[in-house]
Image (cartoon, rainbow, N blue to C red; front, side, top):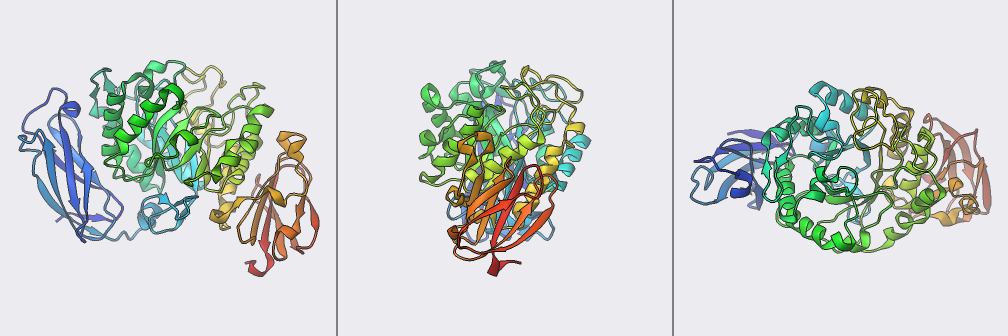
Length: 529
């Protein structure tokens, strides 16, 4: 009997009795798995070329599992009523995805956790074209670099789209429009990219249906396909990669409201209504907000947004004064994640100057502190488009010359993200809630670029304050129920400077050790470690 480790991937293959004209349209394969304790789960199978069909499954309990297929049309005896068994054993390695299990929501629905309850910090990177255009060695080198810097999520596109009309080998993932034909060769290349990400301990967050209505929009399946065909294409990907450790992103870079609302609600329910086993979200266009329209959708688990690549006061104020800073209080609660803030080396839309590592840090720390802390995403010009040579990414004339990805992975902003991850990993970040009221003075009221963001735990035993420009911050120390031990953290190089214990009696002015942006950490003196 085949043996599979818990939370890894079991795969079974079946052969249909005949070849179908359009298999993904003409056949539906469903496999019922039965757990050692008798629980039953239905999983979609998928066509993998010729007469070959497969099912993939990630078991979450040890012991003997069994499965049985059902097929439409039922007369295909190669796919109907096929049975088998396998043995699942506990995972013994060091990969957190397999040690702790799939990603889900915390009990309070404010942050992400592994299946065993361990908090999961979303440290994302946007390699939109990475899986499509990379070779095997390049993809593994990229993942190794990101893992060394603490990244836990890679955001990618898994179809042809406006910035990659084909994959590296010239394959498209589907042809047609009113009745599409899916090309398994396209996805056979992607299989090893998903495998490599998970095996490196990185969650894959694929955009299933990129949907931007601008540029060469006809290349984007979420824009160009009718709803029923968009559903079919997305469900194929859910079937193929549902045994991996993933977070689904249904649509990319569109509005999803107004005249498009009912269409996207139909697509979301059609894709995830029956076979959803992972968290799902949407990726709206820049500074666009969809929470109120999707708040009651059971499949919509995460509030993902993009503050985008602007540097004007208007663009910055949307993040620190707009919906990310206010709507987190709405019910039902969901984690808030900025999954596309300022991209390093991307030309800022207003100034037309390259976005710096400081601007990346500012957007990241702001994002983590204006809503309950759950995580944030980094991006770099050259990585997202997977540039092999310097150049302007396809259909993106406003972003400037992008550097090759092997150079871009070493931009200083990615090192800042490593320090960010180290800092938050050293505290109980999952308890942080916005707490601007601890500030005696908010310089952001005079200039939004100077906005200081602050968060604390509900018990008041931990406080985190980010100061982007000012040389001092004034804190109402009576906000905290006990004296606090204070230290400075440099988000530029990760160094710490001890301040000492500060009484909780009056406003205290903390002066930064030097120029640059700083993080002030306050911990209850009695719980200092």
